[in-house]
Length: 153
Image (cartoon, rainbow, N blue to C red; front, side, top):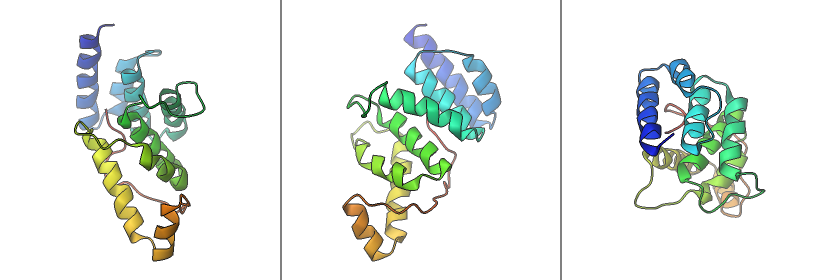
């Protein structure tokens, strides 16, 4: 599969997701893709279908790439989608630990910006002592709801 074909497929999947049809988008992906971009899209479809555990497994694989730590080359979008799956699973503190790994570059994906803002706003609502604990890496495991559709492609 060429890059152009992957991008065309991603555009179609995004259109399905925008129109609220993640099942159709997931069917378009088929079974095994072996392309990180398409696996990310599969995970987003699963998030939108509320199949959080399956999405979490996909994102874990593309974020950790069979290693015990996150590679520096892992795109922030994949990490943001993994964080989203963790948030939806109820693992807020684990998701917040990954917030610092999201790159603040000029070419940052809009979904990453949106998720970072959500985390920033969430931290701001915490009592002062919990905000201080966040600075030293101790995060509250309070639930956090997403005010937007989960996942970005």
